[in-house]
Amino acid sequence: QKEVEQDPGPLSVPEGAIVSLNCTYSNSAFQYFMWYRQYSRKGPELLMYTYSSGNKEDGRFTAQVDKSSKYISLFIRDSQPSDSATYLCAMDYSGAGSYQLTFGKGTKLSVIP
Amino acid sequence: NAGVMQNPRHLVRRRGQEARLRCSPMKGHSHVYWYRQLPEEGLKFMVYLQKENIIDESGMPKERFSAEFPKEGPSILRIQQVVRGDSAAYFCASSQNRGGYEQYFGPGTRLTVT
Image (cartoon, rainbow over all chains, first blue to last red; front, side, top):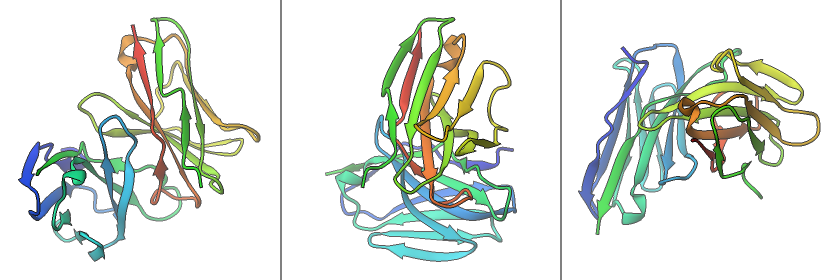
């Protein structure tokens, strides 16, 4: 079983729809959870990060973490064509000695005008 | 405020040649990380460096790959005697603090081995 599982999609939605992106993970030591957006042939762009369980909102984006289920989500409200990209979840252990992020493979999202 | 800079953006090497990839972290960042993204694969951690020190190279292949972050100048990822399987996008990230989260990525170097 891979440490982080993410449905690769592709996911196609109409403009204005609510988008739900998800990752599951197997390692209960993960404490920090990140979402990155990557446009084609560009570097990943950090969207949000969350520590432990709970919700975090930033504009049209909401990140949720459920550590009991080892499940994280990113919701995008009022999706726009400019949101079309690949979305990567990433996770990190807490504490000293942890430096590397563990990524999912990414979900490719297309928002159709 | 300039972000993470990487050069070259595209690099073509023949099998057996050497590839040198450069990374300048964001201003004020002293922690640098290298990741590799193979086609249809996720980003995989390779190495974490601070100035003049390799902190964690657990993701680095044991042979042909090396990394450095000198006191002056950019971080360098060096691949000797490249093979076709080294073709990938190589991303550098930097952070202000020690620790994994809140890493900011550069645009990547796309290496093609012919």
